Image 1 (cartoon, each protein chain N blue to C red):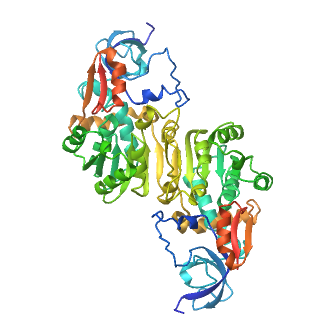
Image 2: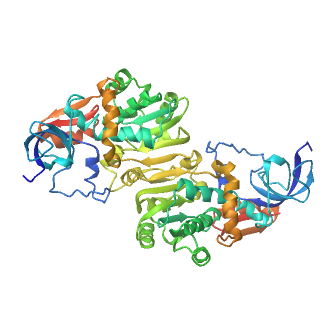
Image 3: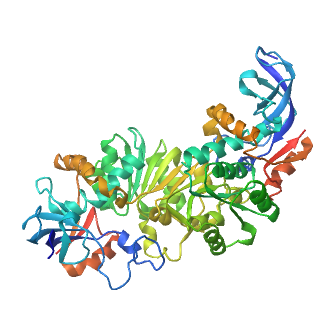
Length: 307
Length: 307
């Protein structure tokens, strides 16, 4: 172990939808991810050996060391966790990467304003369930789109979302448009999209002039439509009429602003103003199954594998 | 004639692609345009009667009075033209509405920076031929997409565009991607889109991280695909990877900033730094044919009907 390095024993390992993108045969991402390498991921674990001046054995850290049980990593490449704020698993979810893109996405890219109507797809997921709560804290009308009654109950009863739509009961654009019009009598100002496909086609039909669409994920496309794109109705003429702004956002673009996010989100979580759920699956060998489960809607909140 | 009103005799009447959108059966636009009303349009004409304190007979003005030969209009609703800057017909083109959305679109919405690569579709049209020249003045590498050798020659030889692509010779996404990669060795930073369809599908495949796509027009869709959208490959996952921003822009959003645009563009036109072409068709009765001609690529620069 070199000077400054530590050994971290994984306790919680992250599975996230973006990992499916890395399996695309085409060049879809900056980081190519060939067969035969460790799947990259976030991890929360305990330091079991240290050659660092700043971190000691027993400290809990978050790092990006992938799907492995032990990792040697430089002390400058980990984030020391404050276990007084929240459990260490939250460093992968409500105080981690998904929260970062939720927070900066809706506040900065989305330019959210009090009184606006915000629609969130994948609303019960790690990112979506954070976005809906930030939007509520900002004084917006918030509509969550999810895929089960259980998730809709979670959104309405626990997260105080104003209305929910079950996309599995609205599989056509027409049906989804109708549901959106009922849920959004004043139209839609911000659409935070984690899903794409027919849901997005429909939202574009009900947005207001000057609407912002944040593309944080397109999970409906990852399993089948990256190498051979799915066909959908062209919609850029509607972007014109309504002067819509569509912006792709990635958590990594806000990497260096983690302290700023933790500062505000940490207080919200500690004070119970923001709630979170974790779907924790036990067993290192379950990682592929857990990843696959994201695409079957098996998680509410952040999907994590406990080692 | 009421106090403050004038009578304008039309000399030049505008035809623009947006007029085709107004013929859509669905609610595509803020201003519905039923049968049996005058087609709205810009006009440049001479005052032949005046009850105004500020405008007199013989003054030349620009107004939005539609396809008619004479119009009674309030003096506050016209723009007095300075015939020393340029011919009055330019108030419909290079110093009018198309220039306004070109100017503010590429500079403000597009945040154009020296050294970037800018691709413009419909590059030989009224808006496109203005955008390419502003982008050149800003020190960018500029690629114009057009539909004939004559237009490509105009772009390269008269407007100093760096490279051109004939979309009629690149009808598939694959072929257009190949042409774009040759023309844009450093990728594309800004795409100013007047056309949409396959061209846009292709550009999205070659843009750089952080690219801006300005949707100013989607002329490829207006004739057949507004009421029943054309299908195309879904691409929002690519918007995600590249953190692209797509923004719809309309000339009307910059209506109140006309003096600012005229100030800079007027000097450029007067000094010959920005050139322009007009395709002028003679005869009031030719207005429908002229409009139709826009969709067959019959114009280079601004299409105008002279009355």
